[in-house]
Length: 107
Length: 122
Image (cartoon, rainbow over all chains, first blue to last red):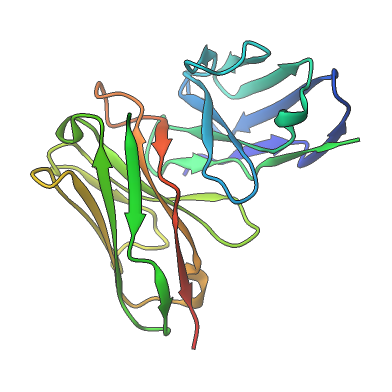
């Protein structure tokens, strides 16, 4: 199974900051990576797919990059509603796997 | 509006069984691979199973293979997860999720249902 390792596991930041979350795959997955945001008690919400394509309706302050084994999610200009947990997911092959999550907290 | 609504969760004893359902609306259900993903309390996301549009291809996580069965009824726009031999470690919120496109069974998940809680405890 392809393992995904996210870093950091948790992150404190302030409104207006630029933050970057990384996701490393244990083997090459081309661009078969998605990013989700999850708030407490809610289902995950798709932000990015195919590593860098912004899902419709998602604010442009979210961006994704990378291919192969190394990927990043960047949030430029944090807003109060962005404080949540973020997950990466690979869909290159089954079993589909998720990163362990990155909790983004208010500083 | 695309909508997925799960049902069937609840409290069950270890070794027991439960059947989850997911009612889909707002899209052509029969064209999409469908998926179950779970999340144990306070933990991360774990993919459970996927079924292709026609049901011809089915995939399971190792942790549930042989105990869980995913199925679908395209005439009823419904997805199911039959869970047998349940264990305490199966306790989780179970989400139904549609695959992002119809082009391939290898997909991101969008949208997700609201989830249904399964608790396995004596």
